[in-house]
Image (cartoon, helix red, strand yellow):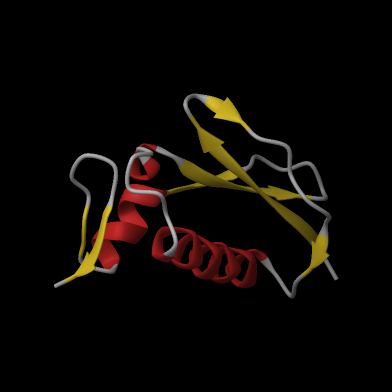
Length: 90
Protein backbone atom coordinates (compact mmCIF):
# COMPACT_ATOMS: atom_id res chain seq x y z
CA UNK A 1 0.00 0.00 0.00
CA UNK A 2 1.34 3.49 -0.83
CA UNK A 3 2.54 5.74 1.99
CA UNK A 4 1.62 9.41 2.38
CA UNK A 5 2.20 12.20 4.86
CA UNK A 6 0.61 15.59 5.31
CA UNK A 7 2.47 18.83 6.04
CA UNK A 8 1.10 22.28 6.76
CA UNK A 9 2.39 25.21 4.76
CA UNK A 10 1.80 28.52 6.52
CA UNK A 11 3.58 31.89 6.42
CA UNK A 12 5.47 30.56 3.37
CA UNK A 13 7.06 27.86 5.54
CA UNK A 14 6.58 24.14 5.26
CA UNK A 15 6.18 22.77 8.77
CA UNK A 16 7.57 19.42 9.80
CA UNK A 17 5.38 16.53 8.80
CA UNK A 18 4.16 13.69 10.91
CA UNK A 19 4.48 9.98 10.38
CA UNK A 20 3.80 8.31 7.08
CA UNK A 21 0.42 6.57 6.76
CA UNK A 22 -0.59 3.84 4.38
CA UNK A 23 -3.58 4.67 2.20
CA UNK A 24 -5.10 2.91 -0.80
CA UNK A 25 -4.12 5.51 -3.40
CA UNK A 26 -3.72 9.22 -4.19
CA UNK A 27 -7.50 9.78 -4.15
CA UNK A 28 -7.68 8.37 -0.61
CA UNK A 29 -4.80 10.65 0.41
CA UNK A 30 -6.62 13.69 -1.00
CA UNK A 31 -9.79 12.71 0.86
CA UNK A 32 -7.82 12.34 4.10
CA UNK A 33 -6.18 15.74 3.51
CA UNK A 34 -9.60 17.37 3.03
CA UNK A 35 -10.81 15.85 6.32
CA UNK A 36 -7.68 17.09 8.11
CA UNK A 37 -8.13 20.56 6.63
CA UNK A 38 -11.78 20.70 7.72
CA UNK A 39 -10.82 19.70 11.26
CA UNK A 40 -8.07 22.31 11.32
CA UNK A 41 -10.38 25.06 10.08
CA UNK A 42 -13.07 24.09 12.61
CA UNK A 43 -10.71 24.85 15.51
CA UNK A 44 -8.64 27.57 13.84
CA UNK A 45 -7.45 30.63 15.73
CA UNK A 46 -9.18 33.48 13.86
CA UNK A 47 -6.12 35.72 14.19
CA UNK A 48 -4.04 33.41 11.99
CA UNK A 49 -4.45 33.68 8.20
CA UNK A 50 -5.22 29.98 7.78
CA UNK A 51 -6.81 30.43 4.38
CA UNK A 52 -3.45 31.61 3.05
CA UNK A 53 -2.00 28.22 3.98
CA UNK A 54 -2.14 24.79 2.42
CA UNK A 55 -1.84 21.12 3.23
CA UNK A 56 0.93 19.44 1.29
CA UNK A 57 0.40 15.77 0.49
CA UNK A 58 3.71 13.95 0.05
CA UNK A 59 3.94 10.45 -1.40
CA UNK A 60 6.44 7.86 -0.26
CA UNK A 61 7.34 7.14 -3.89
CA UNK A 62 8.89 10.60 -4.25
CA UNK A 63 6.38 11.88 -6.79
CA UNK A 64 5.52 15.57 -6.95
CA UNK A 65 3.62 16.67 -3.81
CA UNK A 66 -0.03 17.68 -4.16
CA UNK A 67 -1.03 21.06 -2.69
CA UNK A 68 -4.47 21.49 -1.12
CA UNK A 69 -5.08 25.23 -0.48
CA UNK A 70 -6.99 25.79 2.77
CA UNK A 71 -8.85 28.63 1.03
CA UNK A 72 -10.46 26.05 -1.27
CA UNK A 73 -11.53 23.89 1.67
CA UNK A 74 -12.96 26.94 3.48
CA UNK A 75 -14.91 27.86 0.34
CA UNK A 76 -16.28 24.32 0.07
CA UNK A 77 -17.48 24.64 3.68
CA UNK A 78 -18.97 28.11 3.07
CA UNK A 79 -16.64 29.59 5.68
CA UNK A 80 -15.89 33.30 5.58
CA UNK A 81 -12.26 33.62 4.47
CA UNK A 82 -12.08 37.20 5.77
CA UNK A 83 -9.22 38.41 7.96
CA UNK A 84 -7.94 35.30 9.64
CA UNK A 85 -10.86 32.94 9.53
CA UNK A 86 -14.34 33.55 10.81
CA UNK A 87 -15.34 30.02 11.74
CA UNK A 88 -19.00 30.53 11.12
CA UNK A 89 -20.84 28.55 8.52
CA UNK A 90 -23.54 30.11 6.39
